[in-house]
Every structure is written in C-alpha cells, then in structure tokens.
Image 1 (cartoon, rainbow, N blue to C red):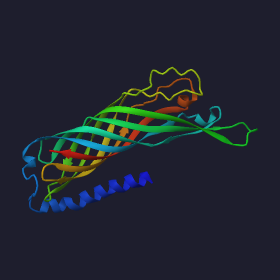
Image 2 (cartoon, rainbow, N blue to C red):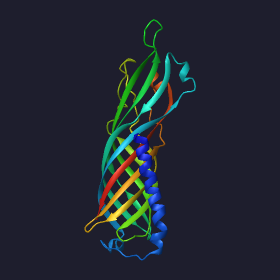
Image 3 (tube, one colour):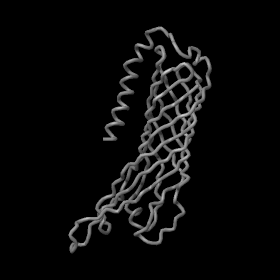
Length: 246
C-alpha cells in the first residue's frame, strides 16, 4: 500500500509538470506573490520530511544451500528528515541545490530458516532490526519550469554522501543467536526527484518526492550466516518533504 502511495505521488508530480510546462512557456510571466524572487541567485530555507528506507539484497550464489536458510527478505520502515536548504541559481532555469540534513531511518532483514522435521512448524523467521541516524550531504541539479502566477514545477538529480552516526560496525558478535547485522559507517549514492512550488506572500512553499539509491556495499561481512548469505547490501530510500524558502 505504501509503495502504491509513493508511486501515485511521483506520477502525479510528473504529470503535473509535463501538463503545465508548455502552458508556462506560452503565457505571460506574471506573478502575484514574491515577484522579484528570481532576481536573487542565492536562497536559503529549511525542510521537513518523512521517509521510507529499505535494503536491496544481493544474495550469494549458494545462499539456499547454506545450512537451513531459505530466504533473506528486506522490510522497509518509516523515518523522518530535517534539514537546511541552500540553492544557487547559476542560470535562469538551472540551479545547484545543497540540502544537508539529519535523517532517522529504520528497516529490517527477515531470515527464514527450516526447522527440524520433528517440530510442528515448518520454518522460523529471524528478524534483524537495523536503525540508522544519518548526516546526509546531497547535492543536486535542479531544472525548474517558468512561473505560472504563483506556481512552478521542477525536476532534480544528483548524488549524496551519508555518515551513519549509529553504525554498529565495531560491535563484536560472539554468537549467532545475538549477532547484529553490521553496516559500514559511510554510504554514497544517486538520487532523482520532482517537486512543485507555491509562492506565498512571504516565502516559497515546496512539496518534493525523491528516490535515493545507494552505490556502496554497506554490509560488513563476518562469519555468521546473517552476512555470509549476502554478497552485497545496498540502501534505498523514498523521501517526501516540505520545504520553506525565503
């Protein structure tokens, strides 16, 4: 249900932008609120957002031959973001957008094992929770449309570098039962998104949907099956945010 909701928002933003861009180019550049907003190249603000984070699991080739393990399935979890917006327009419709933020993310990995034949239940699921507190440094190129009165739309794409302040990379796993899935402290990836902006009397209000795909293998491999069953572990995140810029 959450996946369909995010997908519907994203396609709504795309359709909205494509529908209005030709009209924006054809109509007058009249503006009711903040008429001189784009006379200034540099703008600041802040952003608040909710996210859904998850993993992309690349299992090892012989994963289903390992012990009694049957599958490794990631499960997404909710989180939120708070950050600062810095935007510099070096061309009329093109800007660099830097939004350093603090992100709280939660997700899990579900490991399904066969149980001994003499038990009534055929399988058991072990859930490993992974929570992160991330300091993120995304830099994006933003391509915006012309203003239609107090409305504009935009697309953006770029990259992001992250530091996990809650990383358990130094945890010493002593037994399989209580072993944690250890992740690296640093991650980097690419992101793409779209948004709409409304010019209010004293500030610009924006709504944005962004998808981020991590390129770094986050998993720290040790001797336990929770990591030996996975060849590579990447992050992914959907972020819906509200921005306030002056």
